[in-house]
Amino acid sequence: MSDGYLSAPKKNAQLITGSINSELADFYVDILSWLTKTRKYQRQSNRSNNTFYRVETRSHPLYTSLWEKFYQGKPLRKTYHPFMKYMDAFGLYLLLLGDGSKNGNQIRLHFEGFSRAENMAFQSCFKKRFDLQAHIHRSRQYYNLSFTGENRNKLYYIVEPYLNMVPSMKYKFPTKEEVLNSETWPEIRKNLPKNNKGQFISGSRHSLTPQVTVGGI
Image (cartoon, rainbow, N blue to C red; front, side, top):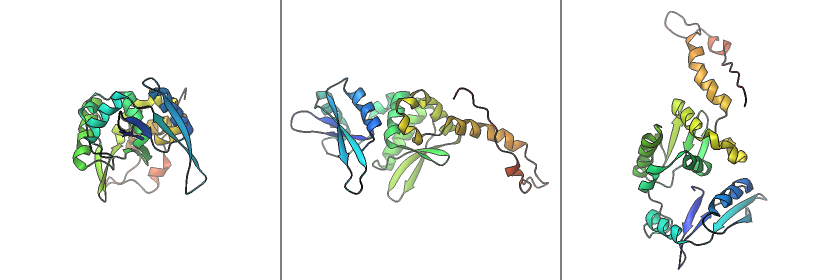
């Protein structure tokens, strides 16, 4: 879970999430409780009156094993690990819940804690696992991945079956109408009037807009 981190006390490690909303915290508790006892804690922001939640599991040998693989004995140092190659659609949804965002007409994965080489490894995994082409962006010394156009829409359809699991997190994803409109617009665009230079006639781009009837949504 990209909202969380592994903490390694003397005996066994545990999984702890950062500041999340109540619904997402309950969702994590339901999942993690299958392995070991997990609790939700309420927290108050020091900068505002906003309430956040934190989830903590009991320590477990499995978390210790993961800590050794991901952190290589160096606390707070995430590393790429080959099991990402086996991520399924639900795993992708979990990843987006934590590090994903809807950014204009794209979906972004904010992997700022990873190097360019590690982002390239994630990029390769998405291509091999889901046939998704992600683009690597750099913001100062940080890197993140974006999915645009057909790849954004394909990603949406992959995780769509899970979107109602945490309704409060839907803001991180495009709506079904937005996806359908983006698929329809190229066909509409072909029929817009152009001059002899192939340029759109003034105002023509605004004379037609995608009209999509979405049923059962």
